[in-house]
Image (tube, rainbow, N blue to C red; front, side):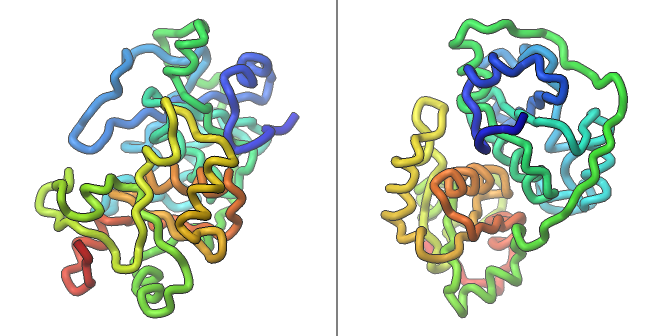
Amino acid sequence: MQLPTPLVSVQWLIEHINHPDLVILDATLKKPGGIAPPVESKVHLPGARFFDIKNTFSDLDSELPNTLPDPEAFSQAAQTLGISNSSLIVVYDAWGIYSSARAWWMFHIMGHEQVAVLDGGLPAWQQAGMMLSTEISNPSAPGDFQAKFRPQLIKYTQDIIENLKTEEALVLDARSNGRFHATAPEPRAGLRGGHIPKSKSLPISEVLENGKMKSKAQLQSIFQSLNADNQPIICSCGSGVTAALIYLAAQLAGSTSLGLYDGSWTEYAQRLDLPVHP
């Protein structure tokens, strides 16, 4: 069996939940400012294992939040979760779709294509009246996952600087319009507001509807309206989390030349030598 797309429905998961290679990961992450999801945080999908973005699947030596760990560290952490190269991974979060996209993207850049986000996440599972668990599951044995890192999918500040000159790629910013235009404060203290010059605003709310991803046709229309279907796309946000959601939306819409600015606005805005537009 293979996962049909990078996004699967609750119904699909219900039908395949007993597949021996299936691994369900809860990748719930608090939003900036320590905001917890509006649903009960101590319930999970049956058999779900916790994919700890903040403390395990980030480079803890980095001064930036949520930085991608190196392939060796990622592989070791995935093995500890019982994940193998043969695993079919479905990742969800308690927001609907938020940090689950970041977990999906990490497996994607590590070369594992059999991974999908649960559309609507925990709220959709609850609305379907499905069974919940108060326990996080632990694997019965380590897995054999080995990353096949694809460095072309990640972008760094130097890539953004080069793109300011060439304008080869379109930078899409997943933060709110208020943060993009510096009319709303950044949640991280002392960080200046505004956006990368020539970038365009695409808040995650624009690609979601009632906690689920909009249809392929709707997503295609959104990206076409931004002229994003004719050039490479670099996805950015505050710290690389919601950038992955825009990345997922772009891939579902058919975009094939995608990158994610891992340091995102947190890294860019700290560089006082770089230009900022309000």
